[in-house]
Image 1 (cartoon, rainbow over the protein chains, first blue to last red):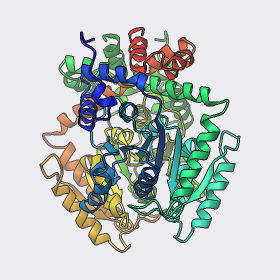
Image 2: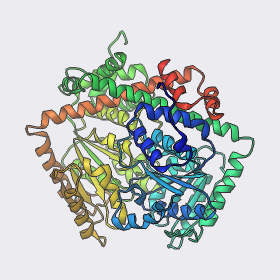
Image 3: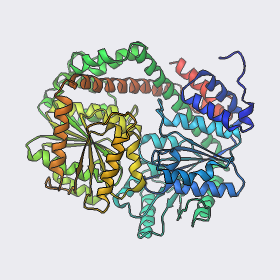
Image 4: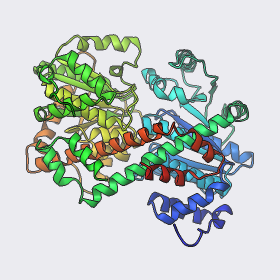
Length: 318
Length: 318
């Protein structure tokens, strides 16, 4: 609690510098940052979040790049949240990629925020929601969230999205199975990127087959789009079709009878993530307060106490 | 707490059926299962855990398969914990792979446990430690932990290993950067698999370069091994060299002055994970007790309350 209400006016006006500072403060879990986020909340809910995920090497960031161009062409302000350490957007990439990104970096109506390289205690998902809310309040109508599509973390992050796009490529062989487990369940649109490669037909057939075999039984209405995405242009073959598939999912999912239930589910996922994150914060603080775990850990490593009993005692002491 | 001490004799005797049941009960967080785990703990600490991780498509499971054959050839009992949804060991793979796995499945001195397809509340890392302790108590001298190497989850899982092997392949292009962020920090041995492919020299050069550029400054003593792993044989080119590199790391890391500190760090990682997991359990129970989050989530989705304040209230009520 602060005595003075946080000044959110610059952020609502779209001031990039203030927003970047807020995001940094949120990462550092500074108290005033959270107060700003709460104050911004009533001004959110206007942005449409598109998640883009898939195997490393599938060309996700090229698809993201092409989508930025597409949405900018429509006059939309585009925010990008990148939680993919393999992405050139993350800043971890080689120089050539970074230079290719400059084009968007110089566009004031594109804001790119990478979460890949920071230590995100309590989950990347929390930070993704945080950043998405700030971008939303700033007036970015379209927010693209790029994650590398393996692991529970990434599936959690995708719960922030309104529409989830899963990108794959021909020639991954058995690795297409990676999509099968988990990711296919969250996919609203499937992309076969690099569709000029040999094996695109087979990849599409495999995807259709997997959609039919989904564990949940019911056949989800998932469109498959082929793309040959090229950086720096929205004219990449298939990008307009991909954007159309996203809009088509948006119509089906977010304008009909199920929209309210979906909105509740999304808020529920966010709450669950925040509760987990807050408890993780507590645990970290509690362990730090007792000078770390070294002494107890040594007892455990010498098998004088067992780790499960010790952990229970630590939690009970919180 | 139970009045009677759990009967752990069958597990210490290596009974597979009892062990499998215990692992299942641990997944379901049954109270008696935890008591058994605590009772088993003094009998653990003999196994050597090797983590194998890397990009999807790098051929990790083929390397694991070849290592199983290698260690079986030395007469060791081999346990495998698979937390890689792309791995044929996980059971999620296509039929052909599963048949190739049968060879090991029929060997009573090989025990394969997949964690990929279950809902592991509180983290895969906790479950990995649980299963590794059971295998250790059963007398498996070598435990291989296969994870897909992307995401914080997987890095956490690797904290259970004594030696961490990171597998890559030529031709991943920029995706080798994925290794740079996070994984390289945990690698004790680096493998260039499919080393007969074009670009192996360049991949090795890139890895060496990245080792030099590591953020932490100090140049870690990491061996790079080239393999052409083939399922069903330990004669795959490079597998013996890989095993030798693992033993060499074991000598350096676990027999010298730093061994005790390393053991403490490993126990500490396990404790931190357990504390996080216990708190997550509490959160889940608390949310379930109030009939889920639907009503509050609806308030949030309609922006009548903000999610951060609601989450704080939920945690305060725990």
